[in-house]
Image (cartoon, rainbow, N blue to C red; front, side):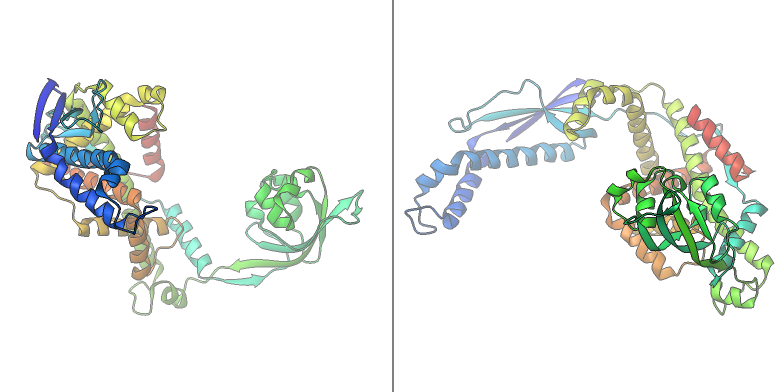
Length: 456
């Protein structure tokens, strides 16, 4: 089997694979004999059908399969041996010759390949970037302490409805101000005032007392949101649209409230364990600041990596690509992709390719590789940050580990995490190679910076 390459430009080439019968016939014969052993054909005992009949029935399809296997092996073997750096997968040339596989023995297959361009983008001390370190405000500390105390608190029954309560009651559909005969009735209708959509309707609840009966419109209370209304009234979703403008009475039978824990030794023990050093508000605030710092570090790193990307793309300048070939490759890989969308997104796609190439070059030059340990550590950080978003700052290690491993089992999530680890390692290289100025900002200031980046 002969494989050759013809470079059609600096960034494209055609690889040709020539195949003769000697390259595939032994495999075809072996496959047909195996097929014969297991074939169940009417008129013959299993495995005893004549080989000639087998060849007549499946010979051509087996031949095509073995030729394809041999060609693919030779094609990618050549790419590996020659250390060709290509973008995407090879594509059959557009004017490929058609063959009669039943009668012909010698074949020639040609493939277009997009060659990765050579890119020069070195990091130097004269390059300057700012690393924005996000510092939590005292208000954020206060809010976190409040949330932790609420989480550690207990449910108590109250006499008057407040915004954060859980309200239970009996809902009855009304007609002309009276219970409607055969109307909707929900004996255990549950309302969480803080999650309702209409301030006017919610105002009827806030301040109401245990045993009071109010009149309200469920449809307006939830702004026509079908799942919420169906759940409140315990009805089918299809029945909800007809309730627009329909009034209900609601007799409050129970008001449940989360009573926050006190900031005392019992709280510290429950939140952090018996042997924890956190035994005062000062120590708690320090712990919260450290948690915020760890959580915000991911966002700061993201901003720094994005700025670094812009710097590297600028240093790389205009990079040549065979755009027509790349579009064919993308369309072949994604059957649902539209040409007009690809045309619109092509500049961004080319920038992504350029940055990935530069990133790979810089990591390789630094001898950096991504290990399973790197990936596991980063997955744990992501898991910890996700729990922290919901105020869960003292999650058991076992739960974090299980959550992290579940993320890594999803291939798409794993690929994303690998890319983020690579970005993190690139950022570490850049911080040593260029001049970095660190600046402390509040979350609000940081969000403004990110918003300005998006507009740009």
